[in-house]
Length: 426
Ligand code: PSV
Ligand code: MN
Ligand code: MN
Image (cartoon, rainbow, N blue to C red; front, side):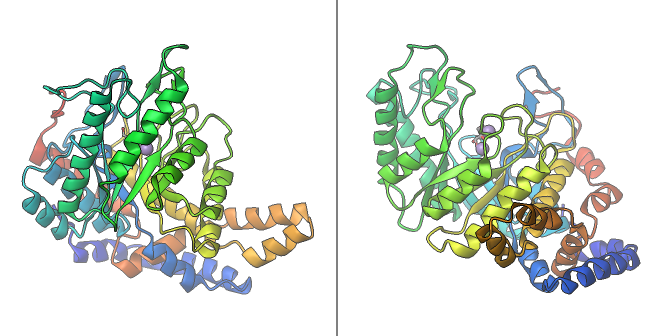
């Protein structure tokens, strides 16, 4: 399914007056403050976020899973769904695959489908947290950290296989997230587990092509509930340094204990040139994978403030790989992703409004109130017309969710694919 440009333009027609009025208002207010609004629109329109293949079906919890109907059953259908998101927003032009969930049967055909939707292949994700049917070795007691060298080698080989698939697809990076850890005290020797992990990662790193990067994701707990071997950014950073210059830390917003100052982690990593990737989602308690911006939008804005600062001031840090890592049990997954994309761009646009020079001066003068006022002034600006202007420029929908509903996308997907979930048959 492709959403025709003219259909989108027609749909936008009904909002022309309100858009002109709302954009004119914000543009005038910002230009009075000396902000070049067209520059902000341009930056927002250039921002691209990868969509993970696993967010396109209705997610679940360990207690159950409820199908939404019309869910994709194949990689082709997943690419098709991302195509819909991209047609409506022009910000979702990349997919992140998880192997073996998404192992392509016919690479050439998959590349053609992706190209027909203007989708490129972002980071490849390996999976050593589940045993595959007929697998020769089990990850029950860890993968890269395992006490058994044969299991570690098996997990390293899987990552090399993922790199090889990615090479064929045109990807340029590998994300490694490990479930490795312990659920009970005494179960693991922490030092051996860490050393094994480091050696295994170095083994993978040796096979990383020169123009590739490896992202090391951290997470404090789950599925193990006593310890996780790569538990925090410091451990990831240390391992990235032990691998080499193509290895970076990946920050997933949900992978922090409550109240962790994520923006400070971002600032530290960018200063050190080691922030490589970013997984967006939101959470109230743990790794909840909720819609971006649904719980803590101000924290997201503060994180973007550091990201924008880093992108402008830290040439030692490479361009970041952005990805949404959220998935849903009760919402239409495509609507949910549209909400996440909107929230990301809102936080980004607001952060772009911060007068960095004025903020530096206020910081130098220790004018705490002014510093806070500068941030909140930007945060309290309704930047949605700026996002609309960016989408209009790119030929996308002014109101993506309204367009999605008016075009009855889900209804057509259900008609084409049925109401049953392919994974559970329910
Ligand atoms: C783990 O919680 C994680 O955030 C990693 O990025 C995984 O690859 C992803 O979720 C999907 O399970
Ligand atoms: Mn993640
Ligand atoms: Mn996660």
